[in-house]
Length: 141
Image 1: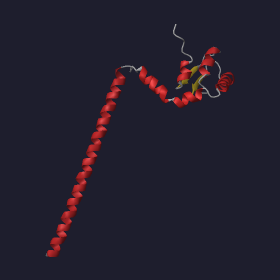
Image 2 (image 1 turned 60 degrees about the vertical axis):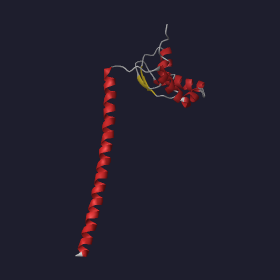
Image 3 (image 1 turned 90 degrees about the vertical axis):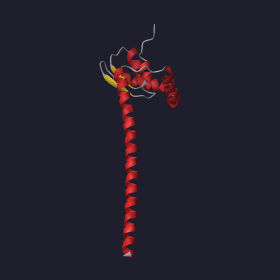
Image 4 (image 1 turned 180 degrees about the vertical axis):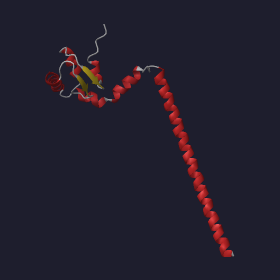
């Protein structure tokens, strides 16, 4: 009888441990779901802001982004004459009137849109290269 009582005590103890672990896991899952819900709400609010209209960016944010790209600015002046020559060669040999081109964000190809404009070649240029984009913006009068 005493042997059976000992086994029942061990079984009840193990069941208690498993129930504790189960509640602990449930609590962690619910907490994680709460965090996910909060992030989804924040994401939804961001989407709503975008739908409301254009977002006005601060010039300070723009300057901060430019400052973060210091390695790019360092590479810009390295062998600049060679890079401009490469861009000129690309324009003269490979780009024709009414072509659509994609210009990468490198320091060698940033002059391609400017050279196209100087040569009066009408082409569609798609780029994520801020220097390439700025090079074709007309000056403020």
